[in-house]
Amino acid sequence: MSEAVTEEGTAATAQIEADKVLDCTGLLCPIPVVKTSQAIKEVEVGEILEMIATDPGAPPDMEAWARQTGHELVDQAEEDGKYLFWFKRTR
Image 1 (cartoon, rainbow, N blue to C red):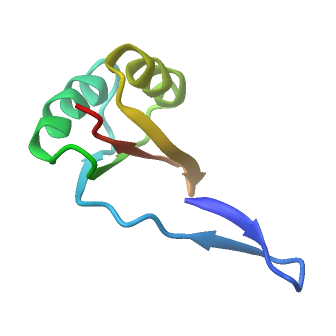
Image 2: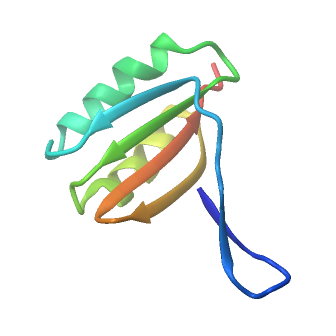
């Protein structure tokens, strides 16, 4: 989700269409990384995996995971204590 400011000056959330959603709420490192590695194999190249986590360590972990695996971190957001990530499978 990305925030964009509308003409009225209010924040609007743009929704990214995910092909698969992985809910890792309540799971601590390294489980979200492991489950994301498994789930990305279940979408086709070019498709989007959305991952939801509550572990405060998830943002740096998932940024590192994207760099190391070569999959694209399309966007990330924090919403109501949850960390949301959208990855595009690149290979």
